[in-house]
Image 1: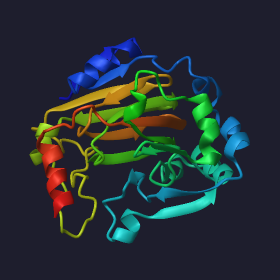
Image 2: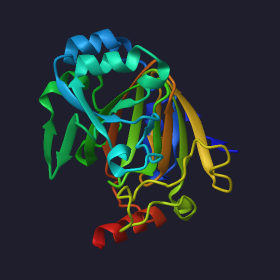
Image 3: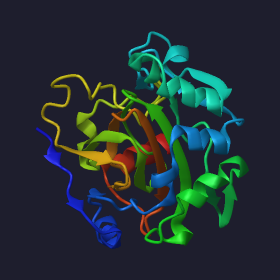
Image 4: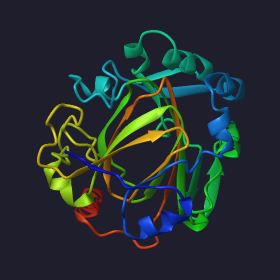
Length: 273
């Protein structure tokens, strides 16, 4: 059985958890953000509706869809106006709503590289509603992404290969999360470098299958609107999106000292090959 992710009530405690690479849910840590009050589908359509976006597309609701027979199906993309995408994930059969997922893979909100900060102009209003938390060191900020999904969308078990800490803010809806520490990487059957699947930061295990992670030390928790989840650098994670309309904004930042652990070492070998 997974152990529960620790829960606290103050974002001021984030720095202590970051220093020790300990996951934590900060209950209600974003409840006072304008986004939590505003980000209904109708509000976001008024704000961004005419923007053309790409999004992830999966027949099963698993993103990526590693049950598919071909890479084209696994990593399929769709394209639509933002308003049409929002309609697709909030209306119609539940199984259809889960097939589409928008993330920063398709378009970042903010990125900071070599001291230069770039904001994707059409998404700038999102930052006005969900500003970078003061608890994140500004000079270590790396990327900000927004996520939008319907009920039932599932993100596959993976680690972020950017070496960053991640503060995941649940704005609307709800999610179940599963975390695995970096020292468990050899138990996760990661896709091999040089193999047929290029997603080498992803596990070949379907974490939602009963008993799939037997023998793996896991942490689990739930996020409601206004909660924050801190995922330390190199921790593997998977999510099930439970709300009728799920919106998140994620803040990645580089640890002050790069982490040394089996997952970081694995990624370093991949990048040096």
